[in-house]
Image (tube, rainbow, N blue to C red; front, side, top):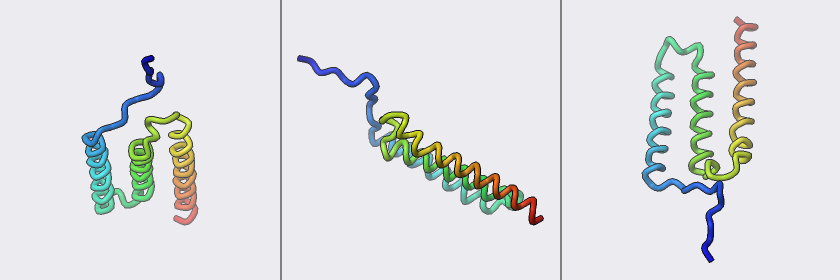
Length: 101
């Protein structure tokens, strides 16, 4: 009897894909460091860094924790609350910045 693969099963990444994801994470980190030193972006520093950090979190969670290959529910459990928390945090930062300036 021949075994069939689960219809939603996808192949897991090989070492080359992990290296590509690591390079993307390194590039995002370099961008974060560069943004810190750009004076013109000092007012938007925290929101930009939060977005880039959330992107890195999602990449790590989806690829290195293999959530990309599991149910979409698991991916949503990790990424949606982070996006909501970041949006609330950015909104509060904007609110308090306007109140105290």
